[in-house]
Length: 300
Image (cartoon, rainbow, N blue to C red; front, side):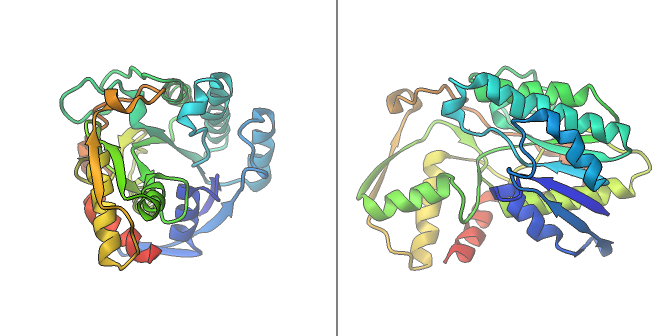
């Protein structure tokens, strides 16, 4: 099985390349995997006209697109570019896959919702993004879903790993520099460890290959459970102390979104319902706090 991974130096891309390796065994099935790991310079989503040529060159059976425009604040002034990277180029990839009997996986975000719902969002809840980044992701979802039969979109939330630019790394940095921090406590979601998201993706591919009919569509995939950014921060510092990582921080003060004065509007409720993923693909990620512990073990 030949799998092409875009954005291979990003958080999820790196985790996927590691998860696949040369051989993978899941559910007692050994799968021979050839991974084509492409960096941004080798597969530039800002240049959609070059995409088909690269895919034709490698002829993958699966294309997994982890590359994306993810700078939420900057997207407010670069929405056209965000639309190209998160919408137009993924459409071209999906079209190539449809025309060449390949399967396509891409990733979306909790930011496609406005967060006004009171329970975890299901896949069929109407999208209503509050910011440019969310709008670009909705565009991508729509364009991909209009093409072909073998496509999957995994919506996820609050992704982090040991080395990337993410909330966990930022908290550790600030926690080593400051005695007091302020962290938002009224935005709810599920922190998702990139390694777990990668393993869940691999598990899903194994299941999809075993189905008589490809189960295309949008699925929510996050670590189980829920917390706030404040709760996430507290768990990070707790795990850091357990691993004897030096910290200066003594107080993590909870603040509301309105008091934090962030220039980009974000949803208060980013919780995603994973029942469809569990039922159709049999995939379930571990609880978010266990994943944080595992990430901190790798970091330490």
